[in-house]
Image 1 (cartoon, rainbow, N blue to C red):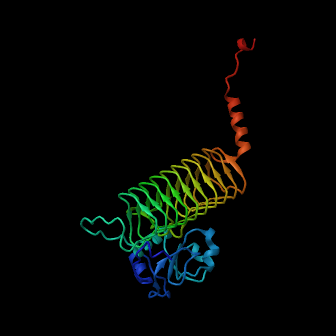
Image 2 (cartoon, one colour):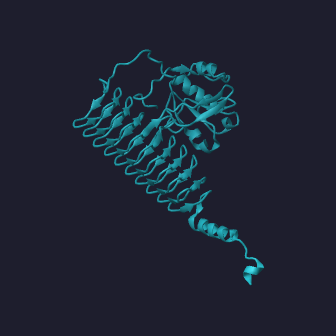
Image 3 (cartoon, helix red, strand yellow):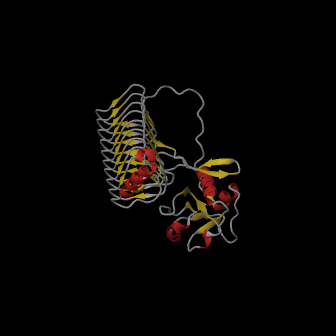
Length: 344
């Protein structure tokens, strides 16, 4: 279930209401009056939730999900399951539409708000310093002895633990942050992930309804972006170190004490194990697994899973020794051949 500290949910709605609003049909014999209250993944869904099944690799989760309704295709509906289905031609589009039904855009509050650096419902711990121009949102919780730099924006419901330091101009929303976390200037934590589904009206944004979880002792340089989860959370474990100019996509998991050098980009839903070293300008595709202790050389392009302890480089990334041999061989082949006069 989505975290109510960050999101306002509409509903509940019946299956018939949802089907009507997205142009789908309830199958004969299915309960049109079935009450639905939220969206969730197959793995985390509970009674009353709507889930999506659009990829056969999640068949095991589909078979045992506790969701009350699963949106899927005619082909995938034939796989074993024990729930009510809503069969549609484009499940991902339908699920995005349902997400917007439960979580419509917030209504604008016309007018100019008065300056309010700390919302009356926010909590600020003892010994905390808040710089000029900073803003602490409703129901936020800031621990003791925290430094909040100038012009920092802390959104509604955000939690920040003791002894953190947040540099100037950072924007933090939809996040739960542990103790002793250090951020340089201009970081963006908790923004929407980059996820769209094509529709007849254009690209429909997939609702981003998760959080960012940052454990203790994580450090950021400047100008890093960590997107919140779509369904579920983006999770950064303890002791991770970020250089500057790093982008972490939605639902990424980063294991403890990993190190990311400047200009790294990690695609959504990729899992990075503990103690991984990622060199500068490495690009990692989405939905991959990077094993514990792996080493990714600078400017690598990672398009496949990387085993624990594996060392890779190049584009596409391949075993490091092989990449070095290929580079040396290519350089040798590219050398100009000597003319007959030069050989004499």
